Length: 120
Image (cartoon, rainbow, N blue to C red; front, side):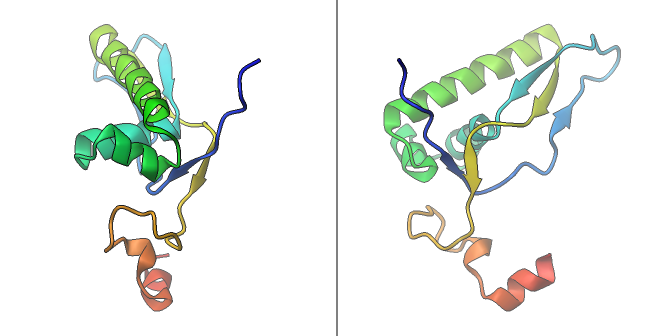
């Protein structure tokens, strides 16, 4: 019996959660979970290693590697087959900025409460 899925910490919920190819859409779509999106963002966009990504997600390096590989495979299918993409679901907690594990010391969520109120 497999172990239960460990809840992942996600710092940034995606602003855009659906992508559709221009032109004729096939109607099919693939779902990228929020933690898979976060792994892609951390490794490909932010330049973190898989070990650093795992620490940020609160999982081990091998788990981060599996999440990343699954996400990359889905993105390849989306691009090659011209499928639509939806980002939703997954077992995650949204970071509130109260942790010392955040890789960005200047994280917007760590700013003063007055600054956060103006953004909401």
